Amino acid sequence: MKDHTIDITLSSTKKQKPESDQLVFGRVFTDHMFIMDYTEGKGWHDPRIIPYQPIILDPASMIFHYGQSVFEGLKAYLTKDEQVLLFRPDKNMQRLNKSNDRLCIPRIDEELALDALKQLIMIDRDWIPGAEGTSLYIRPFIIATEPFLGVAPSKSYQFIIILSPVGSYYKEGIHPVKIAVESEFVRAVSGGTGTAKTGGNYAASLRAQEVATDKGYSQVLWLDGVEKKYIEEVGSMNIFFKINGEVITPSLNGSILEGVTRNSIIQLLKHWNIPVTERKISMDEIYDAYSNGLLEEAFGTGTAAVISPIGEFFWRDEKLVINNGQTGQLSKKLYDTLTGIQKGTEPDPFDWVVEVK
Ligand code: COI
Image (cartoon, rainbow, N blue to C red; front, side):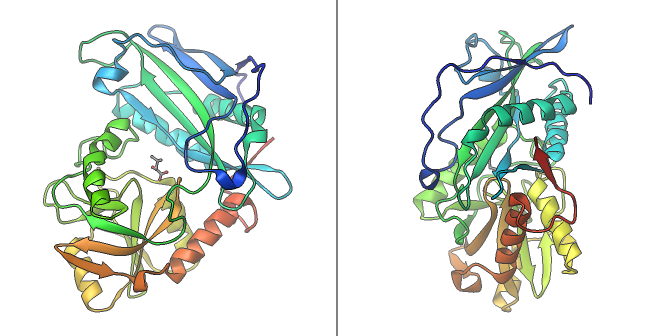
């Protein structure tokens, strides 16, 4: 490993930690953070771990005006024998650089970022909750900091990592959610920024989400931005269907985020010899499968919720109730296996888990 000297300043005070059974998603943050600057001509410099604190930015900073930013999300888990495990963290750092490329943000050194992340976790390791369904959510992100109102890539940036002890992302946990199929708004189009993890994609999703919530639905099902026919994602997650014994997920078509959980589910299914296909799939096809009694399960996948079973779709004034609104057997098995691998209670045939020491 290269020598990345990360300067460390420890906090003189410690915040009170929430009880493990009180944890929600992303509301409390640990005692420290990682930060590193980028200056044109100098590159990324001054990597440091400091007490968690507000950052001071010029109001003209480009992040506030044109949204040049990227982020990642991954989790650290505490095992029963107090080991600290990360799940495929290299994948997140690779994706961060892919997002950087799309948003014209200078690439980071993935090895340095991983090293920083590990050091930060070990400094705040007392914050990793151990209770069932909890973990330490890790949020690396990069923002454009140059004070300038011209539309151009910023000449300065900050790369920051913050940590948050979390419970389940949806209040439903592993219980099925109700989804409204979105026929007006779209999340992304091919050639746009849908494949990058950038804040604007999430901002663009809020209006549809608000309308769905008002109607009693947890999330929306996103259709393609051209014909509004083909399925892309669900809420902020990738989506899978089980139809007549075969698992189908939309192929990565240039507007869908390349989820680490998505990729892991595909590999697990192949390992179990369950047929899994990545292809275009339309809402009409889902409706036909449903009408013929062949739509067995549907679920979203993402780091935050891992697996989120879908109990109902609302489409064209009709309710499509899946598996009697119950969590399907495969969804449950995938959830148990993946969270088991992540927490070190299930074998890890793919060497996905990395111990932090
Ligand atoms: C995920 O991990 O599933 C997400 O993308 C949600 C995150 C934006 C909170």
